[in-house]
Image 1 (cartoon, rainbow, N blue to C red):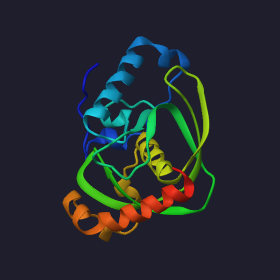
Image 2 (cartoon, rainbow, N blue to C red; image 1 turned 180 degrees about the horizontal axis):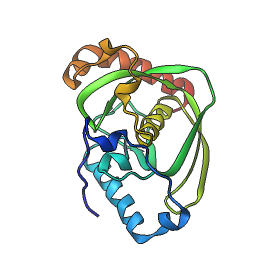
Image 3 (cartoon, one colour; image 1 turned 30 degrees about the horizontal axis):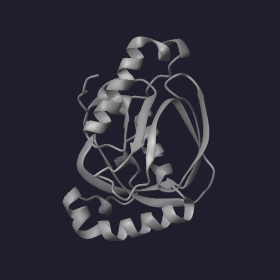
Length: 191
C-alpha cells in the first residue's frame, strides 16, 4: 500500500467525470492495489470518504468510512464501504443543510443541501452487488463522494456563498449549532 497525493481545487482531474469499470478490470491486481492505496490515503488524511478522482485516477471508485474521526466527531459510524460504479437515487424531497468540507478544498466549509434518504446501487471491491438505503447525515457523505466521480465539488452545491467559512471560524461560530442539528437528524433518521 502507498499514500497517494490528494488533488486540490483547481486541478482539472477534479472536474472530470470518472469512467466506469468492468468486472474484469475491477478484479485485476492493479485495481485492487489502487483500492488499498485509496483507503490508506483516506485514513491517513482523516477523511470520511475519498474518491478516485481526488488521487488522480478517473475511475468510478470511492470509499467511505467514519470511525472516531477527529474531523467529524458528530458523524455516525460507517464501516469501510468501497463503492464501484455507484448510482444514487433520492427517495425523498427532504433536504438537510449540511456544513461540508473536503480534502480537495483545504480549510473551507460551506452549507450544502443534501437529500436525507437515498438508494445506493454499486459493486463492492469484489464485484458483489450493493443495494441499500442510506439515511440522514450518512446520506450526505455518500452524495459528497459520488459527486466527486461526476466532477462536482461541494462548493458547486453551496447555494449561499455567505455560508463559506474557514475551519477555525466554523468551529468558533457555527459548529455548536450545526452539531445540534446534525445530532437531531441522526437521532430521527438513524444515520
